[in-house]
Length: 319
Ligand code: NAD
Image 1 (cartoon, rainbow, N blue to C red):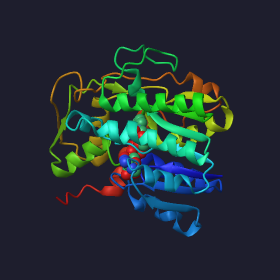
Image 2 (image 1 turned 90 degrees about the vertical axis):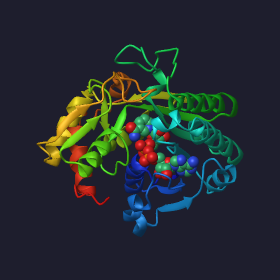
Image 3 (image 1 turned 180 degrees about the vertical axis):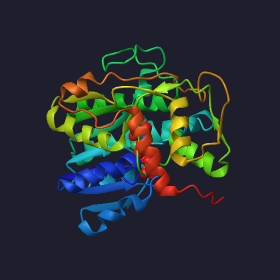
């Protein structure tokens, strides 16, 4: 198979590509390298199976050119990864999420590419959804601009399925963590401790509680579900069995980094930032019934991630 992976130089994209390469696929990566890194794909150079195109999803010509490379299936992962950015630059998610996804499906229509997998998010469910939240919960009312762009992306893809005969797999991810992470709470905590090993500032009261899935599990789940679910439109939550609090994450990171004297200080309030959802847990029954189970639950994934990131970036502050 020849796959186009948008955002393939990113955190989840590069792990997905590891799996695609090992099963023999050929991959075209379209990435503007805004948060992705070419070094995440270096180990595939010798295989000749990965071609990287530096381009922007907001530019239709870039997307159309990449789509014209004899593509069988698109994995659409590129997006602004920073939910908080939407609170300051309010058209970020509209452009990097909604318009970018329109460009992808429209380029698919013009190039007659029929299959797409889309990285959506648990945040589409909004606040107040029953926990764990099943795929058929609704109406979905996201409270962040990022969530709105994911919901809009799902709507565009579903409309291209209904109107132009696309086949789609929409994945609503929990928090995905692991090696090569470049953002998120564990990454932030390690960087804060590098700057000052004596204190760790935690946004909110630390009681925010979410589900964490290891990135290798996430990539395996995507490929498993695509191999067994064959409806025109397939919707799956991807997550782990349980949740972990931010307080627990802070304690694990302090332990793993060896900064045992660090004072953990909470800024207060029930959420880290405007648009954050303090408690989230996805129902993963549909994923489990498909025959896939995760290898790590939340705390194991958090410890594994802290250890991996620490090995990658070290604790020496270079600022
Ligand atoms: P990431 O930032 O590591 O990956 C995104 C990639 O997209 C990067 O390589 C970046 O350079 C690229 N990119 C961004 N804007 C682009 C543009 N306009 N044109 C071309 N390339 C562009 O983030 P990630 O964590 O790997 O996330 C991958 C996808 O999964 C995203 O769509 C994200 O919204 C979604 N998601 C992630 C999580 C998570 O916990 N990491 C949770 C839910 C959903």
